[in-house]
Amino acid sequence: MYNSTIPSKSDLPSSSQLIRSTIVAILVAATILVTIVLPAEYAVDPTGVGRPLGFTEMGEIKRQLAQEAQADNKIDTAASDARAIAVIEAAASGVPVPSAERIVPASAADAIPGRNDRISVTLKPGEGAEVKLMMKQGDKARYVWTVAGGVVNVDLHGDGGGRSISYAKERGLANDEGTVTAAFDGNHGWFWRNRGDANVTVVLETRGRYAKIKRLV
Image 1 (tube, rainbow, N blue to C red):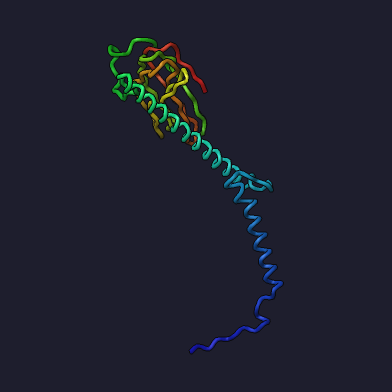
Image 2: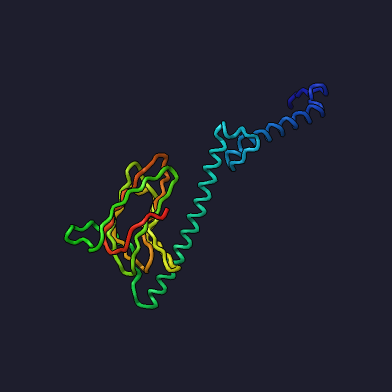
């Protein structure tokens, strides 16, 4: 059996002390909420303190990344739907669906006839750019692109006449090469985004049958 000392009434906190401690705790929690949590998580800075401390910028980055992720998911869904429709239409007509073919670069003698272009695009951190070839259905273009200064995310796709298709989508590439065959009349090409923290330069070389090359974004 243990002997324990029962605290006297004077040793226990009074009701007013408990209330005061509770109020202080609420005020501290509220201060942390408005000065740290809201700016850092949601880019909401009601006091203006979050920005000089760097929390608001952190929240803006998180919000931007969330918005871009949501947009990417929508693009992926739309591209998948378009691809499925193309496959169904091709199966019904007995025509294979054109795709981006990974190849070893051919010699000059094997080069696809047509025009030859070279374009350079510099991307800041978080920035994206789109370059398209204007092509007729069945036209082919060989391409090689490289990144100086880092890596990029890329979406090789096409659109035109109310149709769209995704040929390939990759993340963190420093280079790529292949042949794209136009699934339909329209614009077919690349969207690159720099997810790094330094500028990068994408250099694209194309050769093949297409009316022109243009940067859209």
